[in-house]
Image (tube, rainbow, N blue to C red):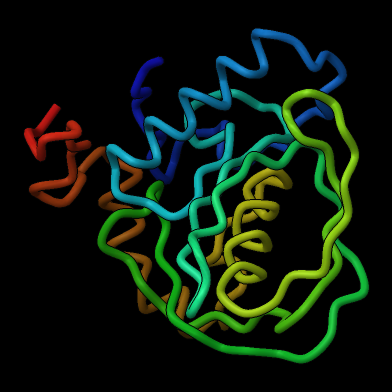
Amino acid sequence: MAVRPVRIYGDPVLRQKAADVTAFDESLRGLVADLFDTMKAYRGVGLAAPQVGVAQRVFVVNVPVEGEPEQRFAIVNPVLDMRSGKLTAEEGCLSMPGIYEDVGRAAELRLRAHDPHGQAFERRVDGYLARAIQHETDHLDGVLFTDRLSPLKRQFLRRQLDELARGEVPEGYHPQSKDGETL
């Protein structure tokens, strides 16, 4: 499919609440394929549709899970509930290159959603996969991981965020092709 440009902090689409997906058609599956291609090219572990300028409730993840194969799948219209525990770990975001901070998230939760073909599913997730799903679901609600930081930490990051909003992206932030070439 295609690698789409990732929207950077300051782009208004990142603050919009995404609309529910109602048509589980080839257009949706094309978007999902583009999200996977884009996520891989930018070397991410998750990517939400608003990050490529599409305000729909869909995201993809490709998360390494210790002792298991990678968890690679698309999630449409997610609902997260039955949260338990809390883990704090460093997060970053493809829409905020160069910014990393510790964020507290639920350690375990229940995910109810659909796949790109409209099939409903439900599963319990924990650890890094739960963190990635919460991060990407936040994108669908117009929430960025920096919104979950203390006011003091957000103030500390203000200069970097302002630079991103002005289009000053860190040097070397470009997608990579399959053979490692910059696109």
